[in-house]
Length: 97
Image 1 (tube, rainbow, N blue to C red):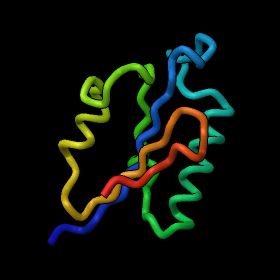
Image 2: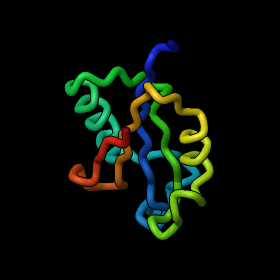
Image 3: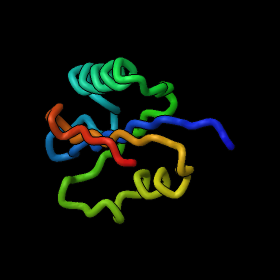
Image 4: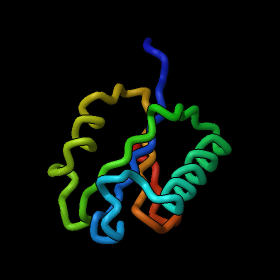
């Protein structure tokens, strides 16, 4: 059986990015992502930095219309873990098994 992998998917809302979408995550967004990465590791997930996926997409876009998210879902194996983060609120983090 292949080794389990853990991923974090974070949606970044372009409407809230103050025009900085093309420049990548802002300092506060990076702090939020690092916090979620630490929380996931504290809960026993083994998420590597390269397994954190950030996508610039409005919340109104269905999951099936999010290219990075659908690509990630297609690559998951049954033993893999996925943590999905909303763009701002910690309480939107959920585990999909």
